[in-house]
Length: 269
Image 1 (tube, rainbow, N blue to C red):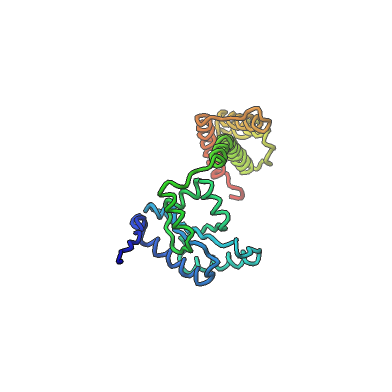
Image 2 (cartoon, helix red, strand yellow; image 1 turned 90 degrees about the horizontal axis):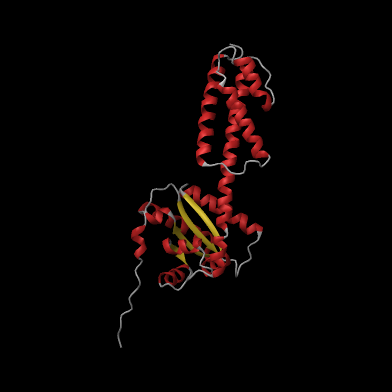
């Protein structure tokens, strides 16, 4: 009895940037020549898979930690060889390496990272690991576990908290921009830089009478000192985007004013 066996075509090939695919294939070929069956899969994924302009060509390398022992010496040798291959092909290559057990755990749990790699990725070298999992995903047979759902949800409150922390830190950076520029301006007229709490008074005493600045600027310095103290003492724990914009504009105005003084009074000139 005669019958035809039809091979599955790879419909994802059309999604890829031709140059990125060529570079990634050269990388996979050289890597396989070095490591052979130590590799379980080499996969192109990421922005190049969606033909978006990007400097990076993201490649996932899955290595065998099941039948082979991953010691420190092996890991260091692997890292050196990876760097040499990248240098010989293209600095656009961005390599992510996962152990086989870690990759399997990502996929088993329906983790978004693993799922996105399966969805967008194309195997450049595969030992029967990646393509079967990709097919299972396309057929809807890989589902997130309840554990992975809650693991990712629990990241949300931390991310919200971190966003506020970053705003507070940004205000702290503005404070130091004001403080450092004030020190520079005072030093440029021959004054010894004072401690931050004394900056407003010294600005009033040394710069305002010379009409180098108006009284607005010592007030700005005092405002930044006060808000920084409140942040340090946790009296202020949140700052809105509108408030940050206000502080940013004041800091820029202050730094620009101090720069004019520094430019005018250059030591030794």
